[in-house]
Length: 464
Image (cartoon, rainbow, N blue to C red; front, side, top):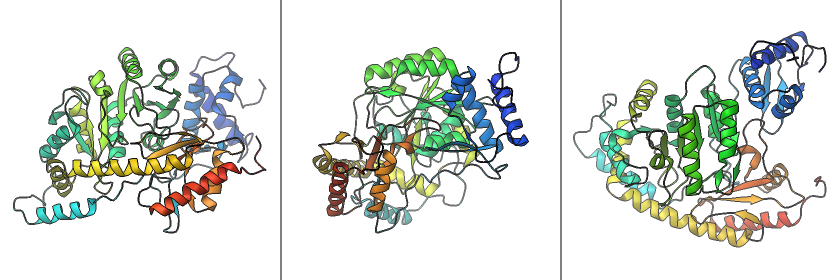
């Protein structure tokens, strides 16, 4: 350890270590000892050097980002910034917007199986009916019919005993997850635990809520219980956001035994589990966390991947006895879903039209997955017939970033594993290929064949 301001010496201190670390970092930046553009060590490297926990370093780095002392870019690292940040860090949009000439396989698109005609027909029908209140704000009871329709849509026993009073509605799954986190998190420095690879929306949610996101590694059965418990001992944490049924990007489906193990840890550590199930299009027989541990688990999903992304209709099956807290969050932030959307989605669900569209969506997804597997099957891929993306582990000679860039040069958009990693997290050498049924099938097949050709011919410049 040097005698300079940075890094600090923890030999004889009484204050909290993260406070000492952030104070030292402030002093080093403001004195010029650490100049603009200086790259700070990764969290784990600095923790090892100083003899403290990675959680302590991550907490100090998070405070430094919020103060504008440093800026962090996923895949590059943490650097001393030019000054105080006037606005929050802006990450890439969660919505992939591509030119018409590009083949967007970054995002996951719902197939067009007649939703447009169905939704327009229902809107015309609603427009001819008398009695809708399209003047006043939604009330706590104006969404009762929609909440009951959601209970019937989820089905018996999927999430344990359920009534309309347990349901809170949101503007899609991402908004519903954020609402649920607001209901679960507390204290000045909240901690969210989640898979070490996952939907980038969790990073966005943590940033918006001024929370620290801590990643937990997975194996073929899902999140590892031993590492979850280690993270809880090291960092604490009020909420675990997890995708047990259809994990993006890896397609992993947590085993029932693994879910039971995670639930038991949640009981011991008084941890709230938020299960994001938005990628599960088909009906499944494995119990959700809410069915296993109803007093601690929240189930979140939406109609986005199974029916239509345009209606922005999401829902939360709240932990037993906690719906009033989530309802208060909803009423305090956006009052409630717009009445026309409530009426539209209630009719979609109760008429059976949503179920018909879900079945068609599922069939189209299976058809396209079969095509993708037939073309890419000789490579190291993970897939499931009902899951609208492929997880491709790259062969020697390719890196996630270089393969993604090579595909972009061919006007094919895919996502590198880096885009799913948490800040300072490690990403495997892999990419996710989204099944986009809005691409003409001939173009879809051509793109997959071109990717297979590129995999066979890695660039000579890649260091292996």
